[in-house]
Image 1 (cartoon, rainbow, N blue to C red):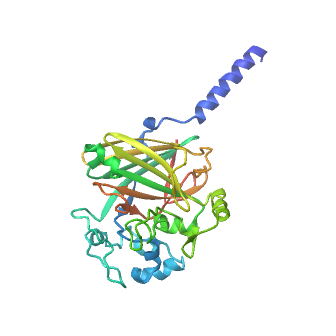
Image 2 (cartoon, rainbow, N blue to C red):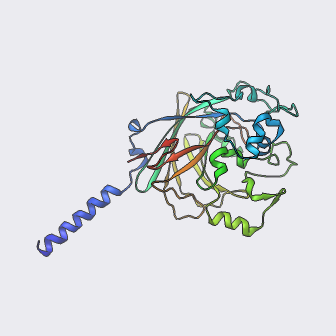
Length: 322
């Protein structure tokens, strides 16, 4: 092969290789070809990490305290049925086992205890794409000003891959009795935090926190909120606090039609940001999903048990490789 022809051949080969490994835009993903799974979310009331381990949880307390059983092992049957009285929690009817106080002291009238979230996910050489659909009120779509009071309709996704307790208990490891609107809060602004960042109620030394951070033992937090028809994203993480100084590496699109929200979140598998969990082909990670709806804010949201996502590896849900 002559020199000029060799150059043309190599150039063509590089273009072909690049085209085979480059990413697609989120709007180009053919969701009709991606398998949909249902993630069930439920209303937990004041079910904190302390509640989960305590006597108010009844027979569920000891297995969580010793970390011998996951939430799903006790509350989800072999055929997928849920043993949770979420309708009674959200209405204020269900009482804690020991104290007999309601799991929800501020009932949400007329709202269901459960919602089904249809979930699809795919990835390519560069990005992961997550599509969520669920039924809701459309409150902040109709009234964008609600977003200014933290009452936006939104979906939040917690992600971790190096925290075993998160794989078993999901978002509950970040919810505590001393947070705002929880039983032991004393009017202080206490946000989400990982239980393992505290010792006898005090935040662990900075060098210990730095060690968790450097090892990726924190929880990534992706948020997509509706402000009118616009979908806005927040990219945060949770360690000793809910920290929002992370650079925003997310993009999202969404709509609300016929009483149904649709959101597609896109993020690079590896952003180069130490505050983001790196998602690796051949590995799995876990997510927990939370839904805020109908002008409710703070802890008044639906949540899921953790779900594992596999990128070409075994998991609860396999992401489709594009």
